[in-house]
Image 1: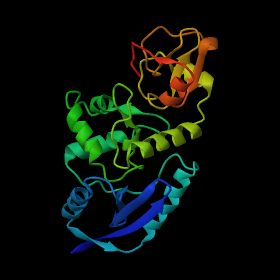
Image 2: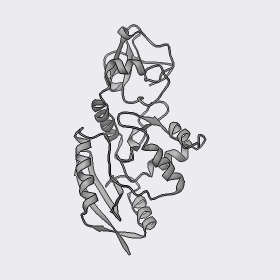
Image 3: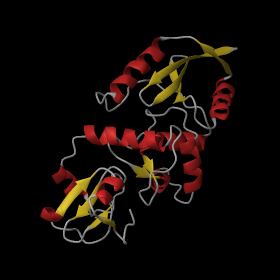
Image 4: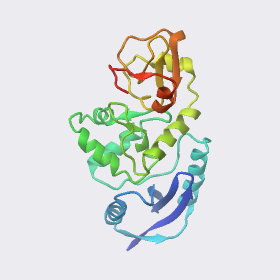
Length: 238
């Protein structure tokens, strides 16, 4: 039987399990996530191979690029992948890779990309089954209401990754202002817009009337926004 080379790798976001098969990465996942056994069995069955703890060129390259990403020195990966799943799952994972560094999308956004707008729940399930984290960026997927929905590495890790990308995306306050009011959800959960004259804070995609630039201040988290005395908008309900 063929083999899947695996390595355990401790990082600042937790211990990761990396796997390669036939010169391509097939696994980059959290060791202690739920569904660990289910995901591993799917990969073994799909590739007709067993796990063997052994290093190789692809795994070494993956560790280097992971470190660069987590240190804010890399915004994309160039490692060959092999996706193990159903055709629908693969279509979702490929769509996830169109959500670029520093941006977010909702399950509905992904469903629209694959022309399956009514399959939001199935998209969420496929998102949760992703076994190549970070490179296939399921951490960039948030709820339609802007909430940080579940994540294999845990919501605190998800929040940390989004903050890392936001800090390194180079988006200025003026660029944030130009973006708000367009009803696009890609920055929801990445930053929040607070309006000094009303004392209200919103998601970037809020459909309420766009405030004047001099009245706007931006915050990274809802907690920070609320701490500074702002209350949530009744329109977008951040």
